[in-house]
Image 1 (cartoon, rainbow, N blue to C red):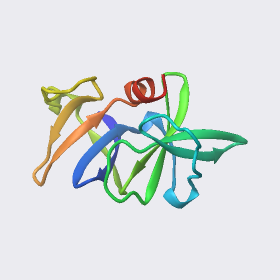
Image 2 (cartoon, rainbow, N blue to C red):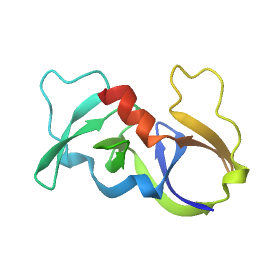
Image 3 (spheres, helix red, strand yellow):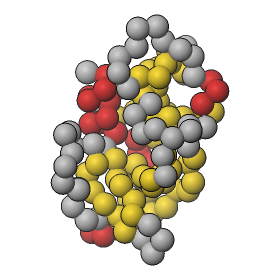
Image 4 (cartoon, rainbow, N blue to C red):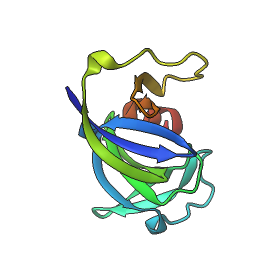
Amino acid sequence: MIAMVRFRAAGASYAIPVSDVRQVRQAAEVSALPAARTGVAGVIRQGGAALPVLSILGGAPKQVLLLEAGGRGYGLLVEEVSTVTNVDERGFGPPPDGQDVGLVTGVLETDAELVLVMDAAALGTRFLG
C-alpha cells in the first residue's frame, strides 16, 4: 500500500505519493516571476526560499501542492486537493500512451473516475531542468 494525495485540475483527477508532498498552500500566495520558463507560474515563499510554482495542468487553480522530489522543491498549481488515500500499487494500470515525457506513471481506476498517477521527480526535471 502506498499513501497518495488525490487532487483535481482542469476536470481531471490525479494522485501523487504523500512522500513527495510537503504542504498544501493557497494559490493566492504565488508571486509572479519575470521572464519565467514555460510552465512556471511564479514563486512561493517557503522557509526563506522562493520555490518555483508550475502551472502545467490548467483549470482554475486555488491551491498549491508543495513537492520535494529528485533533490528539488517546487510547487504545483491545482484546483483542489481532495483526500489522502492508501492505494494498492498492484492496482495501478500502465501509463497511457501518447505522453511526450513520462509524467504519468500509472492509472488508477476507481468506481467513480480514472486517476492519473504523477511522478513528482519527472515533473521537476521536465519543467525546471
